[in-house]
Length: 418
Image 1 (cartoon, rainbow, N blue to C red):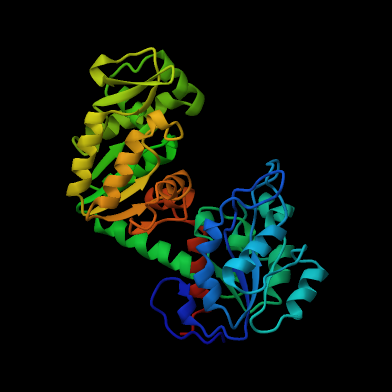
Image 2 (tube, rainbow, N blue to C red):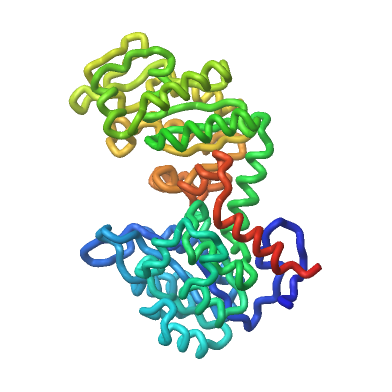
């Protein structure tokens, strides 16, 4: 069989196999901000996150699968520049192959020697990747991409945690044909977040930003499961809860909600039920910062409604939230507390991020926008875990099964040596 060494989780990890000399399909998430004109990669953080996995596969024949952006976007491009940057970061040549599963790709794979790395073409250049994202795994395993590539590979390693909430063929299809293994980044993300969610007692979740639907679902799940005992709110999520508490936020803020959150009144109703079901466990701002034509104006919520939009949490709320952070054993943060891109309204976000970095709590900060803020403030090394996932983290916290993780579990059941 495949020489399984240890079985300790419900999914395989790299330590379970001897991969020396083996052909390994490696799915990464190196989707990066790019200059649409020059094609220059502006931030290689996601690539750096995968270097440990690449190092551990230094004696294998590594065939990388990855995507960049999606059709219709200006940065939807080939992966030539990604191969160049990966070569520098991994300190090993990464050969770009402008094909995914045709004869050129297969030939390139068959000619590899131990230690070689090739990067195949953007998976989203091919219709199967986007058209079959809702198909069953057994259907995906028979697609051209999956069947052809798995026929010339020994193992599949998925390290793309940031895409773990997606069910596209290159992410979930291979595990039906060959053993699917979690890479180092995937293993760390699942281990760390799984442990934090199980701890519950003394866990504080700060849910902010504009992803109202996801965050409210996360909130309900965490409170019901006991994986968090207190929630702090910011951004549009806080505005929804202010309305749920019967506070008139003014027509300007109502317009923002109408534009940014379809059917926002439904979420107000859900927020109201959560406040009633979990009294005292959901904290909402007691004061806010209004945008008066670019000037920061503080106002208590009792002074609402206002003609000016809410752009940040207020000073009293910041002090209150920092107090909760200092009392917590674990802190999970996803989303900025205000419109941090504008300096005048970045204060709440900056102070809360700094408080988390200064606290003794075990801290987890989400990916996407949240991770960008942490890096901009130079705090990424002062938190215990900076997740690479935005959507994946939210899905995991909300209790939704992650398609990639479910695929890894199925593959272990199928290929384990009894």
